Length: 165
Image (tube, rainbow, N blue to C red; front, side, top):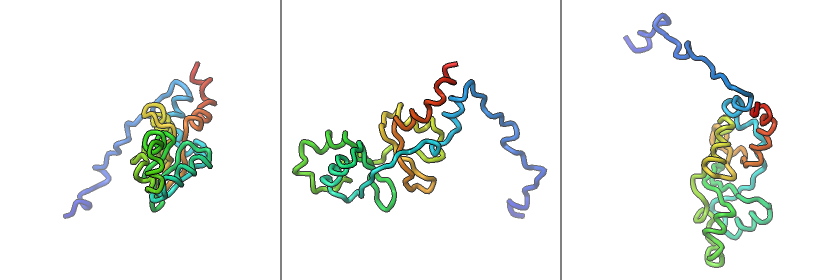
């Protein structure tokens, strides 16, 4: 007799049978815990290949007026290149590094959120982890967008009055 045939409906106990949904004191709390990141208007993003020269990445930052570039390889986010990376890793040695690939100076393994994560996760990535721009990925790992403090604030602002009561 195999494991499947030993299973009967009589023996099945639903693990969620005694689950009680959380109670929130205000709509703001519910939104942080239950609304997904996909509800945020993730802003357009600028991306660059990991093999692109640092010069091109710096030009893309400047030309797009963005403060970060998502670095991709084969459609996947592999890093982020920010104004801070330019200042801390490139500026002093720009002439020596300009033709090197951006993968050498990018921030690797950036904190990401998934479109199905709760809004509170994006807020934590920004506020607690200290990231100004956080890539948003689809469940399959492909890039959906990017969220920023302004994006999250604009979304949550409609719930602030409710939270103060």
